[in-house]
Image 1: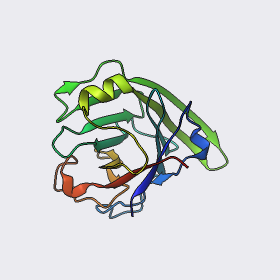
Image 2: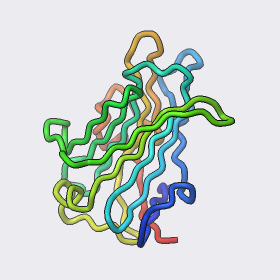
Image 3: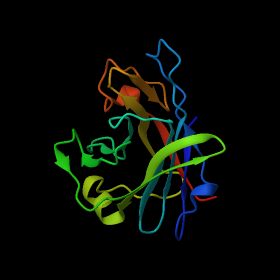
Length: 184
């Protein structure tokens, strides 16, 4: 079943969005599966994503990532955020960095625990440069996946939203699931 991505005529309201819970940790042999989630939507001005990970003491290289393939023949959009605040936005294999992507990081604590994360905003102009021909309209689909990873030997983990084979690259289309744009 396709994950629903809301289309807003104005500013997005993150609290009304569907939540992509990253619960698939196919390589985890212990029980370290930090609860992580992603919210995603399109607004008139941009593509908006919100990453959130509950880790009481995250390692600096703990990372959340979105890889989105808007067109079959185009390069994927790759967005990542680390617990230390480092972020990256690129098209394709990462060799084409995208300048002008806005990132607002945050950390805090609520009744569920300590968390870190951030909002990432990819303007329509930047999205048009890396996915020329894609239009976020109701019923339009695209493919991709969300990941929560850390390659540090103290807490290594590899989580995802759609089931993924981590022996393949994260950009491999076999690791992608379907997203559908909705306006309700």
